Image 1 (spheres, rainbow, N blue to C red):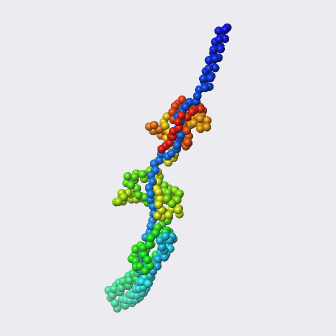
Image 2: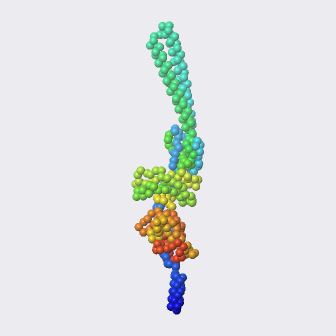
Image 3: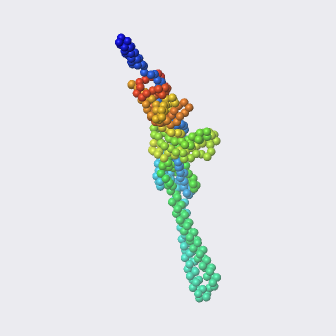
Length: 358
């Protein structure tokens, strides 16, 4: 009986010691890292200038003396607006001359037709030969040709009178002037240059070693003078490099350019290659996959409790894993010994590192 009581006492003492040891077991120490989200896309920037896609050199279609120029550099013009005018005196004289020639040709044609009718009557009576009748018919054809030629000359002189007024072919802004009032110009000589504002571009110079950046990249334009951002696309790549700088001029179209994008402004073109979505690069040892999908253990800051969180792994690298979904910027994750941890377990932090996509 005494032996039984002694064994029972010893067993109770042993259980009490074990409970005391379990109660005093410290929380495990884990190494953690702070998640920093960043994009893996590669971005390169180039500086350029805002330019119009189309710049029209407005010119007279006839030569003459410039009577007046109605616009200056910087003026906005509308399609059909008068830009300059020629002295119309000489053109008026040419028109009057052609009209006089038309009147003479009309009189000649009328006379030839009358002579032909008279010749036909005399031929029927036997007073003229058939050869004379044919000759008179040819004279009518010749007179009609001279009349038609005179008509076209009058039409041409009338058109030239209209060409004495130079009008804008499209809406835009005057970017340059080439003549002054009183100057004699020849046909096709630039009088006013009009830059169209409906389509704007940014022209940059890209080294030959970086032309590959254009393929598969997303372009964005920012202005030095403002905070606006505008999507852009490559419209034209020069076929040969500049002989001095060995760079290729590239024109980027900016379809959504507004009034803030002014011609001549300095702009920056950013070329981004790759997915710009933010991801996290974490150590491979932080990822646990027990057959239910990859997870990481996130440490709750106030309580230091572990939270088992599923993640989406975009790629595995030599020592790291790229996490596309499941983590947020600033999360603290366990980087070692994750296979021994349990969801909800309290831990102590040994060291805080940084886990980012940089």
